[in-house]
Length: 228
Image 1 (cartoon, rainbow, N blue to C red):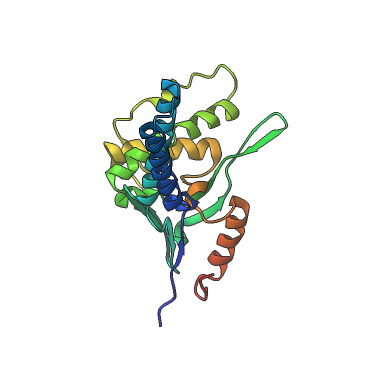
Image 2: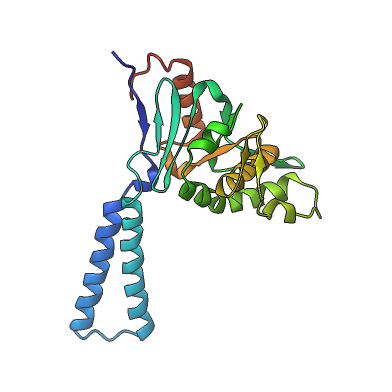
């Protein structure tokens, strides 16, 4: 009998149908008022139509998100995204936690869970180009926050945003193109925040601190876990 896989459903998908229904409802009410001859300022009509469209498309955006964001098996952790996946073996994992920045006496938790790996190569070899490009773009604000908080004031940030021509791993493997870009970003975030890979809180099914405790239990007992 094989060990069960645990899956994590992202909070980003919650209330998707509710947003769609409210969007249609606002549009229907606006259309009814318009056909009934209600006199409203032109800006009010426009605002109501924009609100209905925003609600509807937000619901659609939630619906197209994968139903599962993380898959935890006894051997690996796999991140699922509509643009692709990455995965690594448990044995390759050094640690995970909520990344934090600190300046002076102020500590700020970032809305992610970070994973620090012993070897990033398996991720570079398996990640889809579309997901790599998306993550580099998505994590620009994470990099910016880390640069502002972790480096001395007045530091030149330009090198952190240069596009690399290649990346050479610790084992001597050379990566180019999208893989090199993603590898360098992982390296930068590892230097600044201590982790290679980051999963946003919106992709999780519970608060970050609670998720970390649960994931620690899964890691310790992954060969006899039971889905919650």
